[in-house]
Image 1 (cartoon, rainbow, N blue to C red):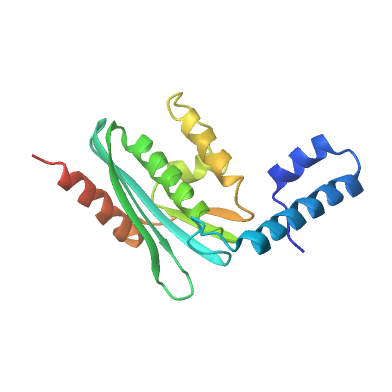
Image 2 (image 1 turned 90 degrees about the vertical axis):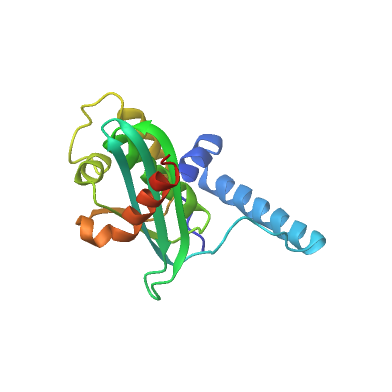
Length: 186
């Protein structure tokens, strides 16, 4: 049996008051999708992997605060340690905290493609972890939209956790941040 994400379940409840009507709709939608696959063959998807547990390591940094900023992230298979995705990007002028949030947002966007059953996000920004988990209030108005974007993306995962780790355990993501910043140094 497939577990429907809470956000999707809420949308279905708004459309169909009775559970049996919701179930019938889902059944018909799946049958139609399977018929399409049988008729047209399996289409290539942008999905890079399906299921399992993944670890996301992300970091953002700024040279100056605000200053030139970049993000770096890695998505790893926790069982094998294999790096499934590595990404870095210069993001223009931002504060350190904005860069940390933008790294997490980008990481979540990349992780969605793998459709993990469980995603654990590791960040060396205690502030970001405690704000997205609700332990800290968001006092900076410029960070509020970033927090909201993280929470919207997080709702797309069946099981997601945010964990603070020391900088020394996030060296790979930090190196990607510096790689992106160094690329744009004149």
